[in-house]
Length: 165
Image 1 (cartoon, helix red, strand yellow):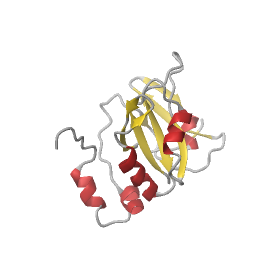
Image 2 (cartoon, one colour):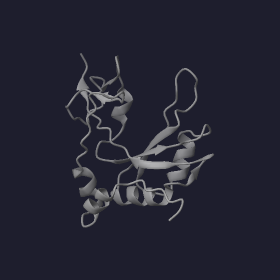
Image 3 (tube, helix red, strand yellow):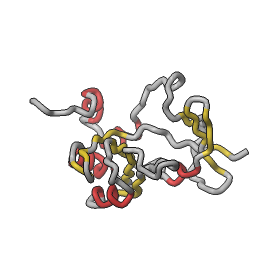
Image 4 (tube, helix red, strand yellow):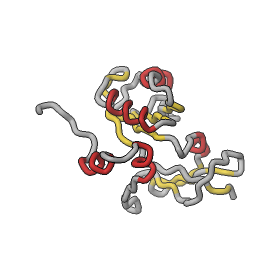
């Protein structure tokens, strides 16, 4: 078919075929070598729901490293979508209104560049229910949210907390 964009791997569809959505997502193994990339790396392997002031998330990109407590706001048991290709008009409210028809939507976030005050062109949406997560992916992938058609993917970052030093 002309003009059709495939955004998921056939192996992902095969693995999910006969399984409940939540078991497939929570048991998925993502094999990625991030040692030589400039992507964000989380350098701890402790997992915690405690979002008290004694916890943080260490992040590193290239030679820069910092602590980011905002990642602790996300429930690690929820299913997260990466929403790419957001236009300059996108913000948390726009993303929330676009996905608000899914009852289990729990959180949305559109990161903003601190220097320019503009969004970074992507966002995240979390769902408590795997079926809403899959339905949102089917319904919203390629649809316009604001000025651009969005591309959805499974958010693969593992949120791992460490104790503050």
